[in-house]
Each structure stands twice: as structure tokens, then as C-alpha cells.
Picture 1 (cartoon, rainbow, N blue to C red):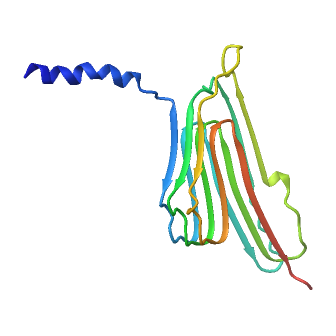
Picture 2: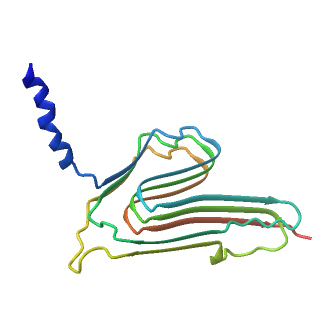
Picture 3: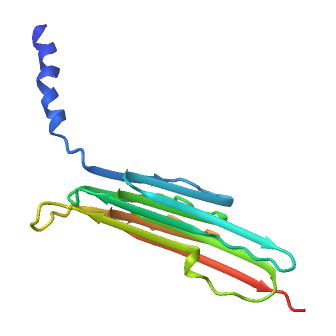
Length: 192
């Protein structure tokens, strides 16, 4: 009887050996048949910045815009961490509308999806760089020598997003210090 109680206690040190530096983000069969606006931000790890911004303006002189600013400065991130981001199964299939997905595993990643629509604008206008700015500084990776790099894995199932209608914006990453953005600006001018 005493032997059975000792076995779990003897196995406890094995739990301490388990690798705590694996960051995993996983979406499986999520968002099927979405209708309208769906924004998803999923992050595994530290120092992640994600945003989905939408703006619509309708009427004489309409002017829609999104302004996003992401700033990040971190020190001492372990580049050897293992990271994986997965979108599996029929996730986000058969949907209609505006979909924004940011998925990140790792550290110090910035992701942004921006969409603006102006109907009835006076004049067309280009997308201004000030509407989206990102800045990431990752310093002090290690002690002088070549930095170790961990395993990275990004998976998007072939079935994901099938049959979606409208606007689909996806940022998906695994690793350290990644920056990604999707921007869509539609401006329909009204002729006097």
C-alpha cells in the first residue's frame, strides 16, 4: 500500500523537467458561418500587441479612417522558445461580412488589421502611413554568441476560410519580434 503512494511522489521531479517555453495558439473549427463583423485576437506568449479596427462613414463629405499605433520595447526575450500557431478544421468557413483574425505564438509580436469605407466622399484619398504605425525593438537576446533559435510552426488548414464572402484579413505568426498589418481603404466619391 505504501508503494502506491510513493510512485506519484517519485514522478513529481519529471514535471519540473517539462519544457515551459512552448507557446501555442490554436483555433479549431471556430467562427463557422459568421455573419457581420467578427474580430479575433489570440496570443500565446509575452508582449503581444493585436488590434482589429473598422470604420464606416456614409453621407455627403463622408470620411472614414482608422488610426492605430503600436509601440513595444522589450529586453531579454528568449529567442530559443518554441512557438506554434494553428488554424485547424473548417474554421471561419461559410461566413459573410468582415473577418479579422490575429493569431500569434511567441513573443514581442505586433499585428493589426484595419479597414475603412467611405461612401459619399467628396474626393478620393490615398491611405496615409500615419493611419497605421508599428514599432518593435527587441534587445539583449543573449550573451554575445550566436543566439539559439527555437522551433517555429505556422499551420492553416486547407479547409479554413473556405466559402467566405466579404473581407477576410489574417495575420498569423510564430516567433519573436514579428510585425504584420493588413489595411483596406475604400472611398467612393460622390460626383456633384
